[in-house]
View 1 (tube, each protein chain N blue to C red):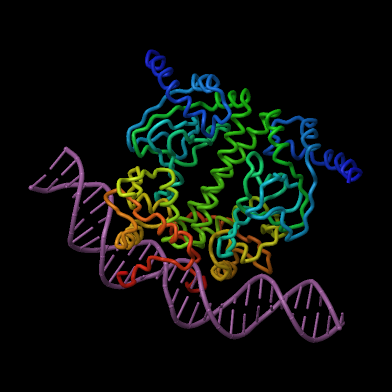
View 2: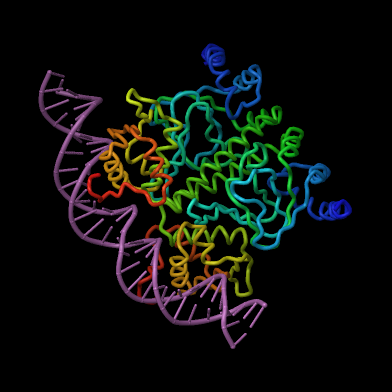
Length: 253
Length: 253
DNA sequence: CGGGAGTTTGAGCTATCTCAACGGGGGTGG
DNA sequence: CCACCCCCGTTGAGATAGCTCAAACTCCCG
């Protein structure tokens, strides 16, 4: 283990530090400062579907995702899942562990093979006292995240399923969109209808129906846990226009 | 103005510092440090229904509420309101203004006569560099708030209106509940059916129907923008029990 | 070449929204 | 002090988006 970490650290550092430097938590940090921080971190690897932590467990570690993707999910008392957010590389998750010792309010599960760093409660506390900038950045991140969550909340409270789905796909496009050969945008992630439903507070049946309708008009293309946007502008129209809808029952074009 | 501020500052300080010391943003601060911070703040007063800021306006100030109550609301493009949160004394709002210059994502409106302090972007930035503890506290506050918002999101996504209403009343009870003479808990705030509906993503009609049913069973008592919980335990049962409901159409007890 | 996970689709159901009409209390202005 | 008006609330009836359940279908994997 010791050999391993001494081997890994410098490799990851040189490769990753520059990336980290540009982003959220380490805004305004010098390279050597980031390296110092990473010295305190422990690398973690997870296979697909493995959990970083479970809802209700003692919150010990904050994670910085380096590669892969993580979904943060909450379970209702009845066992229904709700996807609270998708974590992409260079983002942090498990923030509740950062300063206070409590329980994780949600679970974090790998949707791809993942590499991450993890930091203990005590170390974060100490680091933030030494680097106020880090605390400020963390604050900033949470402000931003609250903002996003508020938007989703408003959508959920006021919009119909079709528009919520459109909004969600657009968000996913921004974060995980990859341009395909015909100009379509492929969502580079495993994404079942069930997953989508859990993100927008709906059922896989309804999601399937809506996507079928969209597919019939060549706006999207769906497959087994795959999805491409053929006509993002149309999806935007659905998301924004109040009086617009695929109108699932209308005559075919 | 100058006379005014010199007159007000010490008065408010001596009276308020101890309160602030115990709470959120100033955890771990010494009295004299809080006083120093408040020197940089400007007092603000608002009448009922006045706005501290509007959604979309340039985010210039972060506010610390001293007295009164504020509701933070988002407007949909169609003009529908959603109440994102209620701010009670010694809480902060307008956090988005703290570090980055952006737009307020929501509006803040006084529901009672309010006193508050406001701090500019630049000052907060400087203060947080001097007092890392302040940044850490702010981070902590936002983590907590995200947690609450996630819970509400999950409720909205998975629960029926009646249970969402129950959860919301329980939350309000904790924050604004005052024990009445007969052991009932009075919600010490102006609270119309419309407001409640905007908090839980429903309509005033549905809320009215549910509360009527509850009132019929002596669980609550409603009036013009008033509400008391006569039997909080029953409301808790509704909130938690999966198979429980007032069953609006059932025979009277 | 099963088997299973993910998906599609139909049919019926129901919680909730919408619309409309009426009720009632309290603040305000005469 | 009274009356009016307005805002808030109630209640009914009808419409509907989306959920539930059930059944069949399809791809991928071993």
